[in-house]
Image 1 (cartoon, rainbow, N blue to C red):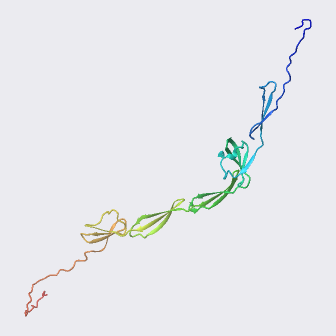
Image 2 (tube, one colour):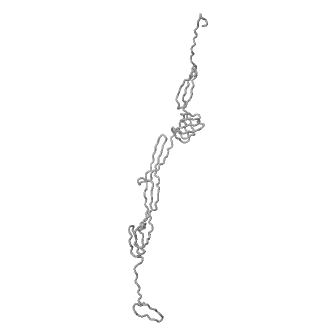
Image 3 (tube, helix red, strand yellow):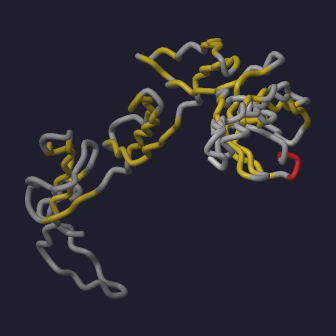
Length: 269
């Protein structure tokens, strides 16, 4: 109040705020829109918009065969990739989605195939035999999001084993038998007779370990021959010594000289 006769009142009023130009920042296609107010300058507040950019589709042949979920590839060409972008493998039509970006390293997930995939062929051997009857081949077709599958089930060739150690008695005939040890294995058993054996000892035979039907035994004391039928020893006809011969009896001794005569009597030679 410089002049007491003429007082003055001075008003100081805030002026209207001036909105600065809004800022727009691009985020990955999978990001969510977001708006924030920057009021660090009270006279010039600023709105900041975070908006997802459009999805980008890249294509080429950097990714060859189809890969499983969450595989990573590092390449300088991936610098501009963002989460939510897609990559199309041109030769096969496989479509991959970007789920992670770290510089030039990108993580992909397989999404779909833009062209019909080739059937995946799977071979599964089945038992060569089921209940003694050869198993029947079978072909099954399945389809899912990952493609087609043709599953061939074909009987495999059975395994063969050989057992040549079945020793038969000399009197038995040779033979071959086939048995199924399991659904996948056939076993050939060869039955081969061994030669007859000749045992010898003084006296009649008793129990002889290892003897088989068709073996022989000689009693060295009496000359008797025995045969074995698998259970008992039986004496065969005849004897190695033969029948007892006649005894020659000499009743007189004679000395023959030149000019001598032989007496005519019974018992002379």
